[in-house]
Image 1 (cartoon, rainbow, N blue to C red):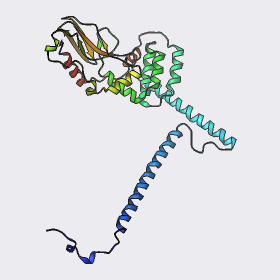
Image 2: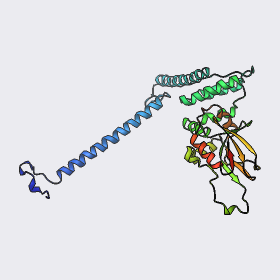
Image 3: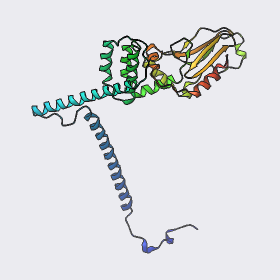
Image 4: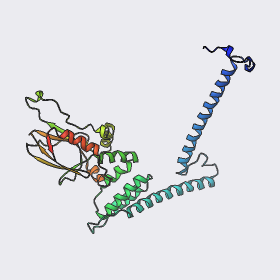
Length: 301
């Protein structure tokens, strides 16, 4: 049965001009939207004020009264210096809790220390303070482990940058007796005359599928933590063996044919220094994908 206006009681029907109800809804919606926008602006302003308050700045900080002006400036200096001292104290507390076996009686370079301290006082993020604390602990135990150039780069890194680098570390491997880590992505085979008759095999791992995207690689290259282009090893001969260690996974490759070269991204000297500090969690998905790709040219054990 089709429902029509006759099915509703006329007694509860209140005459109303057509414009009244829609207009009321429109006004109400406009009021809500305006209230929401005002609230958002208010929250944003509070955030702005909060951040600037951390460096001793407020909208009406400076007045025309010279005495009050000097007081405001001195108060700002005190806030900034206190924050710097707090940052250094946080770095020291972290360093004191790092267990490092001393391997030398050599003293820390004073120039290195004072450069370090002037940089570390500007590090406000707790995760980055932890990294700086580890650097100091290692440098005291083994002077010369970290160059000033590394410190200068590290000072420009954010917590987000450190996360990207940690993802790169999780897929990095080393060859025996080679201190430089690299991100192995696959292999390149020298093409033979009959290669077109064979079914093409995947020769590289798609790093984006294992947590390291192309933008991540570009960021690492811009930060000078890895070199800007892929590198090929020398060609391996048939039966040649290569030992690799990826975090806590060891595997051995035996080349089945000659003319095969491994392809990888190599860490820079700065990236290699920072590699020793980052917590290493194995990327099992990457290891499985890498073995799958390399199985096209190598026996893996």
